[in-house]
Amino acid sequence: MKRLLRSKAVQGLLAALTAAWLRLLIRTLRWRYEGEAAARALIEAPEGAIVLFWHGRIAAGVACRPVLGQKPRRAMISLSRDGEFIAMAARAVGFPAIRGSMSKGGASVLRQAVEALRAGEIVLITPDGPRGPNQTLPLGPVQLARISGAPVLLVGLATRPALRFRSWDEAAVPLPFARAAGVAVGPFRVGRRTDEAGLEAVRADWQARMREAQGRAEAMLAGAA
Figure 1 (cartoon, one colour):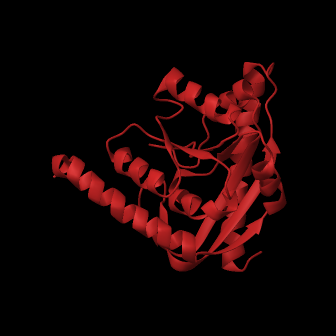
Figure 2 (cartoon, helix red, strand yellow):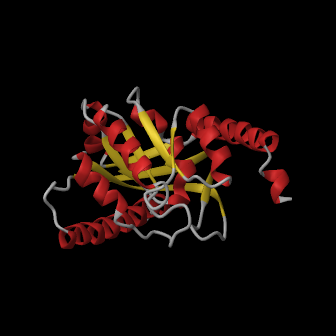
């Protein structure tokens, strides 16, 4: 069964279906935003930027594409076979992929990300992907920010109603016409001379801020805000 699901024909079909679903979400989700001014300032600036959101909110992250306007963008997507159809679908809706992760792909992934950022593109990363732990931020994105000098936006995303899965990332896939909330925090920068202890402090701070932003987005839809 796994061999069948990972065949080129099946992967192509899955990509087409996923892309169609994402296009429907892009057109129909009803968004509320917090921190939109900071996000828009980054989008309108000529320099590139890093956007981080949790892996379980990939569908919502793609669905808020209209916020990016005409800003060039890339999405970091794992090298796994399952990631192949996701990369194909993302490309179909305007998110060309950088294949790999900050932990796998090494120098090539880092080089591609830095080149994209220096070319003025947005690079979207789900830092806890592709295997978790859920909502845990590794050092990779912080190191990328230090090397590239690019600003970083931390984003929480929530949708209701949504299909929710008992997966490691607690994935939530929005339903068409769902309510959606996006909370943007930042931008933040990492100095080029930041030492290892400083990087760890930034990592812990960003992780806490991302979890808080995610909770805030969920609360906005629950009526608790």
